[in-house]
Image 1 (cartoon, helix red, strand yellow):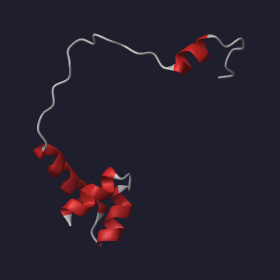
Image 2 (cartoon, one colour):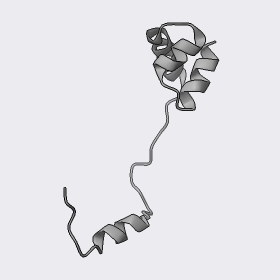
Image 3 (tube, helix red, strand yellow):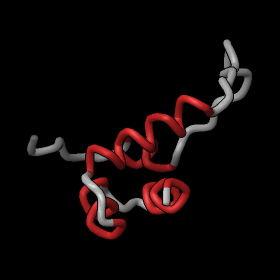
Image 4 (cartoon, rainbow, N blue to C red):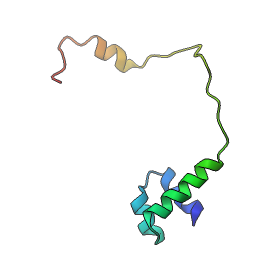
Length: 70
């Protein structure tokens, strides 16, 4: 049941929905997910990026002739 909760969460199902599907309280689901996350190995992020790629959206927004209404 715990593995099913993790699978559903990774697929984007929210905690309350998982609780309803599995017949448990959503707080219980949150505890299961937290325990699962605590058992995952630590990951190391690179300290410095050597290559950075810009998205096309940056160019599009930067070249707009009109300003945003916000």
